[in-house]
Image (cartoon, rainbow over all chains, first blue to last red; front, side, top):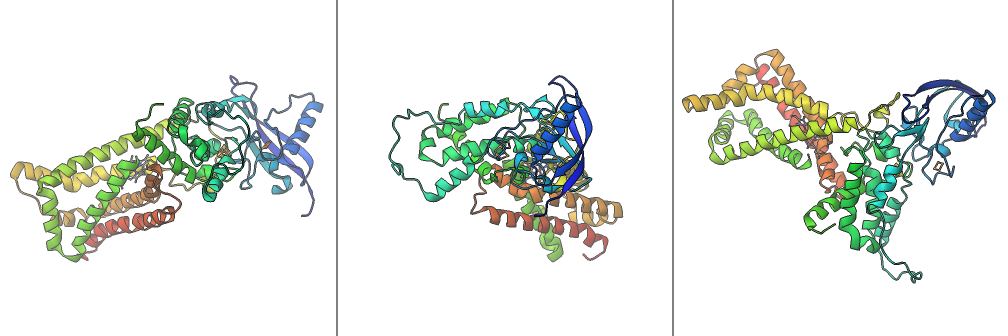
Length: 255
Length: 203
Ligand code: HEM
Ligand code: SF4
Ligand code: FES
């Protein structure tokens, strides 16, 4: 692919803290290489702001290789920008051309309050996991491989669900700010395996209760989450979550 | 939402079937309408239908308003149609349009018929009533718009109901989607043809 440089106009959300009202600031960046990642372009901008004696833009990032889910940015109206199944850190500047204007906003959801600038508080997800997204076993020594027979298709489906990196793009893209795709991935990957079986019923009720407490909206099946998920988590997991939930309601098991 | 939605779909099947008899044979339409209008079981079913509609509307509106509150600060630039269909995001609005249409529709047929039954014990001729009602152009237009809103509501709602109930497994999902699309186009189309047929004097 041909390499080129570009000048861009950036409209970025700036907000001092959770209480501040915040607003957009416009910046110009010059000579951005098409081979930079989107976050590297932000590094250049921050370098520039520091040199001008201004406060750099706060944004979340960690792995910068598409696996941690930290880099939450809503770019020109899409979570993680225009590329399908791509996190912001894996979005590269060849997606843009010279003279483009790019609007960057934080995730917007009641359950994800802004901490500063583009960084939001996603601990609501941690609390949902803590409500049941695990299995309680004494691990002991490592077992022999294939000790527990698992169907190949079940294992594959479980693995696909376990690919969720908890980035929150599903919530950010949903018109209802619903966390159903995230929750369904967490429930499905355990429900499909024998290790998840003993706590299957209590897990789903506890996690759904926690999700509702955190102030996420309810799913109306618009499927925007699946379209924007960087890991291609399927809404079929939401189907599974719904049937797990209905089953647990009728099972009469204690929590 | 899912359970009441599926019940309303079932009602639409019956309603659409009976009405389309008008095209085939006016006699059988009157017979069917008479049966639905006087049979005791049907009166019981009618109470259930109204309960279902009201539950569906109340839940639908509550769902819409509660979900709106979950994003207190909105986006400067919204994803629009990039990641989802406009009608899947507009179920509350489409439903409200259907509700407005429903009020007019009940006031045209159901209301006068039941009123007559209570006061005189006689049914009115629904065929004549349709002829009179659909002689006015604005009524025909409102019915067409109402049915278009219904078509889009179902285009999302049919599949969505099965997903909510956990039934759209990988195997059945394409079938449910296919039937959903066909249903959402065919049923409102048959409904739309009625006012048009009466207005144009085809029946
Ligand atoms: C009269 C006023 C109505 C209102 C305000 C209304 C509103 C809504 C809302 C807000 C939803 C939820 C959106 C979603 O889950 O995707 C919905 C779903 C649905 N509606 Fe309606 N609606 C109305 C009438 C109807 C009628 C007449 C039918 C009959 C065919 C119908 C069939 C459905 C179905 C099948 C669903 C999907 C249920 C689900 O996803 O769980 N609605 N409606
Ligand atoms: S389901 Fe997808 S979009 Fe949602 S948190 Fe997991 S990886 Fe991110
Ligand atoms: S920084 Fe880890 S996924 Fe982007």
